[in-house]
Image 1 (cartoon, helix red, strand yellow):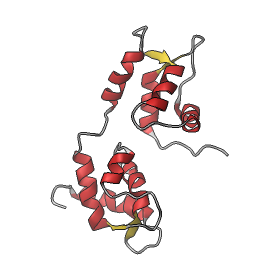
Image 2: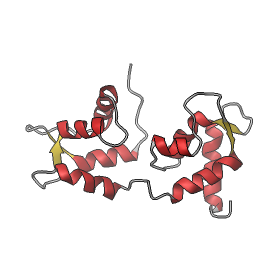
Image 3: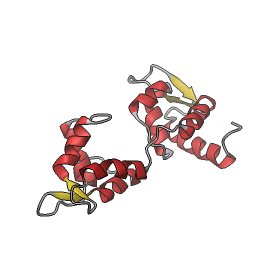
Image 4: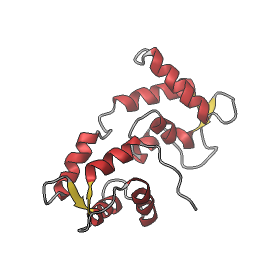
Length: 158
């Protein structure tokens, strides 16, 4: 891969091998999004689908040689949100202009904008990543965004 540095290829290879559960040098395309996120790329499910990710196990397999151009393409993409973009978007809800927003408004945003989440997913995210609310129901949204992007987060207890 001419446009990837050797260390990037090796990092991709190492992560790829984790998802190669059979040891055959291939991963199931259902894991494409997880693999890209494990390589620190912030992508949407729509992007994963455009790059060949599947919803059902066993539909499609990818080799490392097929994966590297996908990684390179996604890495160059302008669709990936940066922390500054996310913080700027949440400033709309910062009525006191002090870095806080109502936790209920954040939940509403997660339920209704972009890749919409369901109530259970929002509850899991709040449990794992949301800073404590103050007495008026406000949270520091920068802390929330940085915690989310820091990942990975523990699986919720069932």
